[in-house]
Length: 337
Image 1 (cartoon, rainbow, N blue to C red):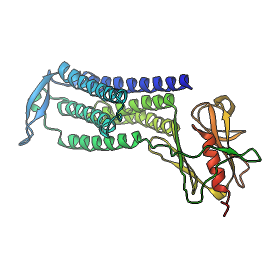
Image 2 (image 1 turned 135 degrees about the vertical axis):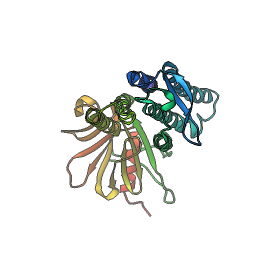
Image 3 (image 1 turned 120 degrees about the vertical axis):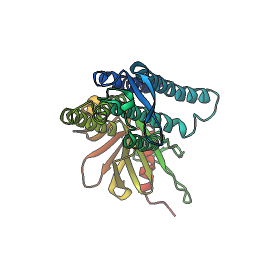
Image 4 (image 1 turned 90 degrees about the vertical axis):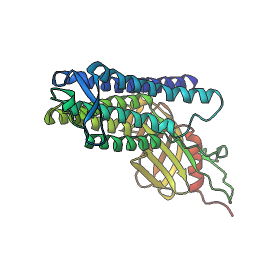
């Protein structure tokens, strides 16, 4: 278990490093990719009164400065969370989730706007303020910050009594008459999350190239579309949240908890915990095999339910699967009076 946790922690750090370094490379590469169409100095600041440029940087500075600023911000947040955790405090407030997403979007969008404003200008004084692009960048940064907050939200698993075996060997919980218990568990595959981040970064690079005018519409969209779809598809299978309550079973996919599959308690014939491996179900992600449908994020315990009238099982790899199955069986069983 410790080895598995260490591997997941290493993969998460690796994914964060890849995303941070890729974003920095994208910010730094934008001016150099268009260097043949840019003046020697780039307009980087404009007056609010008439939109005339009043500040400039050489191409190398306009490339390096925002990239270094992003790397600094990307390093501060995880270090702050780690120090707070080592000191026994909460890892951090909402800003630890919103700041990186908002700052990265803001810097990438601002760099694209600067390049577009200076594109094909003989002198930086001729560059006009890219107001629409800057407004769009601010809106995108706010959306990214909110999305980062939603993705980082971590629900706590509600404590439930220990599972007890029934005479038939099916895990079952004894729920007091006046108690309502909800069981929630989350599982994520950091390697799939890293793959989703990598393909998403390519899609972002293609979108930025389109916005900044560096790429033509046809080739740009041909690159953006498949990588964006691949990133969304992989991200949707990289994390799962399972919830068992009096309403039944709910399985939510992806970083935003969408889409969602639901089964009412009356529709579930039985529930159990079972060990499964990727080799048994045909790989990672959402798999359909002779064992039924399996959401395979890591080998090991899975919550398996048999749906009435279907004749096939639905399984999801999730921690504490036995307790979830026991609670689901208890909710299916009428309480004695």
